[in-house]
Length: 236
Image 1 (cartoon, rainbow, N blue to C red):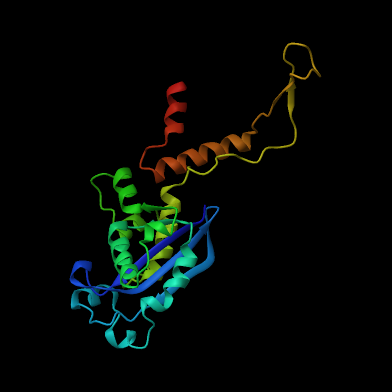
Image 2: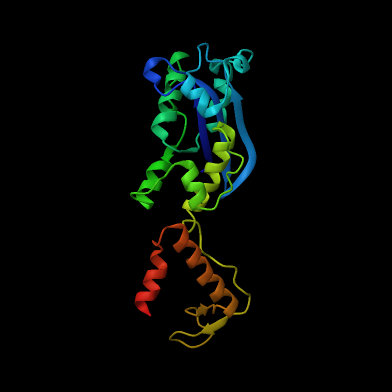
């Protein structure tokens, strides 16, 4: 399944007060790699930006006057995310705003265009209860360079979140290590060469060291929750 990391900037915090999306960005992850494929637009919200929101993202009314409206880019956006898993930090906020924009132009809600929506804020709270889990805090925790983030920006934040998400979920992908071609054949009952022959591939010292390093990395990234490491320690 394709994964799309998504972020928005808005004219204010409350969609119920008529606030609108002014920046929309989406970054693709494929096979746990951030690709060059992304979607990004600044949008004319046809209303003024609150001073509090301006202080956060620095996007001005003047800058947006000649930008497209959401309805102008909606089809392109929905094509880009179609069938993908959406990864969003504090998903209810962005989904609420995007569903409002879609409703204004008679389109179905976001949930009907994608396979699922994953909230990384919820994930972070589960992994790090009682700790700060803002995007900046997670960048610091997972050693993701956010030094360019003087203001919030949808495209930059989506790229940062993509890196944070990959760090948060490290260890959920395959832990398989490339194995050498040499093999040891252990015969089951019936003797060597029987149809029940079993192949045993033994790990080299380098592979064992790589395995230990991977477990240590997962332990750090998960805040001490690497199940495999603790099972090995208990067995030892």
